[in-house]
Structure formats: structure tokens, C-alpha cells
Length: 361
Image (cartoon, rainbow, N blue to C red; front, side):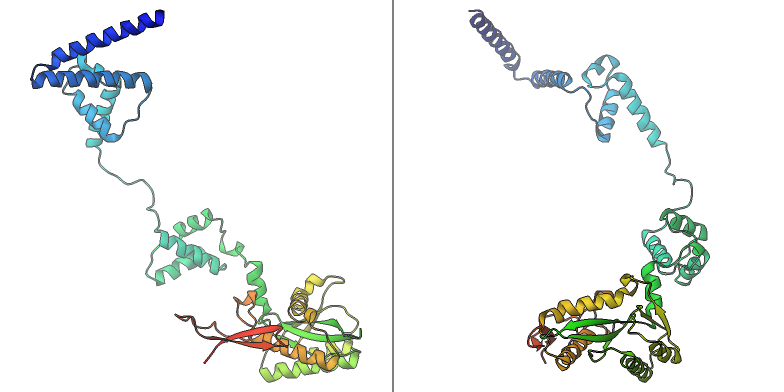
């Protein structure tokens, strides 16, 4: 019963409100319409005040409200959502901004991003260059930067002074790789379970591989003759070899070391039971087995020599190598890019076990 009485009473109040608004709007006067519109806007402002505790004003909103407040007396400032003190503070801030002149931040001007990248590139590519040397190189390029700015930039990126900046391990090994050869033996079991031994040499710098003939008895005479063959091959090519790395296998006799020493090659033996010390040779054995030997049934020494000769030629001339930017050991420069897909021809090696691809003429 109470709900019904409340509903009737609400309907009566709504009817009276409509009649009152109708009496105000019946007059065709622009002033009356503006007054009604102002009433509606004020009521909407009251609704927003109840719902929004702290509205967010943008810069142009603050400027408009501050300017409008100067046109109204203080008694009418209650129409604003903010307090009078806030409006006055906005106005003072606008006045201060009007009379404030632009000025740059104190200190040195910031370096151009391209110059920063160039300085960091020079420091990383030339670890022995100091701040003054980098300044001189930049000056030669027409770029003028103080040594202090260079030092602060390098220090902020964790790059110390020149005497403390040494090459990385990859740079050190790459610089020492030229003139270093590693060698080792690996075994292959034939179809009749006969063990064959193969001696190979790998150039650390170019990853080029040389393989000897296989043998079932790798005695001192065999390894000494392979050392002579290596020395003659290097002499004919004009290659300079300073160091040869080998393990402590008893198959490497003293005469093997003497032949290499006579050619000015220093023989370094790896520690006992340390295959990682001869990692390049061990990795090539794994590659040869994964690509070829584990998928071929060897019948005898001649068969093994023919298979290894074919595979080593493919490895040196065609097989991409990660350490050489996906180039083959005997490839000088990468192939030029083609705008269209050319006609590609496939060449099968070892009965189709290995495929080589080349552009057809």
C-alpha cells in the first residue's frame, strides 16, 4: 500500500514539474530559453559533482575557466566544479607563463644520436683507441666532439678507458686463428668390422680440411710421411703456419714433431683427457660423421678414401659454415643477389647422400 501511495505521489510531483517548465517555455522568448538551458546545465553540473570527486582538466580547459572567471563576480563562482582558490592559481600560472622566456637547460648540449652511435661503434671496433684518438678520428670526418663528452658517453655505456678495454674471446681467437692448424685421428669401422684410421688437418682460420689416406696400422712411418706431405703442400701454397695443435696420442711419434719443427711449426700438445682443447678437430669429426660416415657402409680402405675425398671437396668448396658467415672454407665472397628466382640445378654426390645446388647456365 505504501509503495502505491509513493508511486502516486511521485507521479503528481512529476506532473507539477512538467506544468511549471511548460509555463516557462510557453513564452516565445530567447531569454526564457536561455534561462531554461542554464537551469539544465546547472543541474547536470550538480550531478557531475556528486559522481566525480576530482575531475581532470586539460590546459585549454584551465585557460577557458580562468578567463571566464575574470568576467564573473566571486559570488557566481559556485558554478565551477573547482574551488575559487584553484581558479586563481590557474590564472596566476597563466600570467607567469606569459612573461616567462624560453631558455635551454644548463650544461653541455646533448650529442646527436647518430654521433653517439658512431662513437660507440668506434670504441667497440677499436678497443685500443682512447678518447683523444676517437676525437681525432671524428675530427677527420668533420665531426667535432670534445674528449670529455666522449669519455662520459663511453662510461655511461660501461666501456672503460682504452688500456682496460681488451678484445673479446671471439676477437682474440679470430686474430690468433691465422696460421694455426689442428690435427687428430678418427676411426671408421668397415662392413667386416675392420678398424681404419684416418689422419686429418684443419686450418682454424679458414676451416679448410686436409685428409690423409686411411690405414689399418698408423705407425711412426705413416704419421711422419703425412707430416712431410702437409709441409710440402703448405710450401707450395705459400701458406704460413706457426702452430699445430694435437693431442697426446701415442701414434704421433717424435719424428712427426721433428718434421714440422724443421719447417718452423711449433707443435702444442693438449692436456691429458681434454678433448675441448682441440675443439675444432673434434667438431669436424662430428660433422663428417653426421653428414656422411654414419650413413655409409664402408667396404674397405679404397672405398673410404674415395668417400672422404668426395666429402672433403664438398666441405671445402660448397658446404656453408656458421663461423664463416655461412660461406664455404674456399669461398672468397658471397654470391651476388638475384632479383628473380633462377633455375636451380641439383648435383648428387655419394649416390645422392649429399646434394649440391647451383644456378643453371
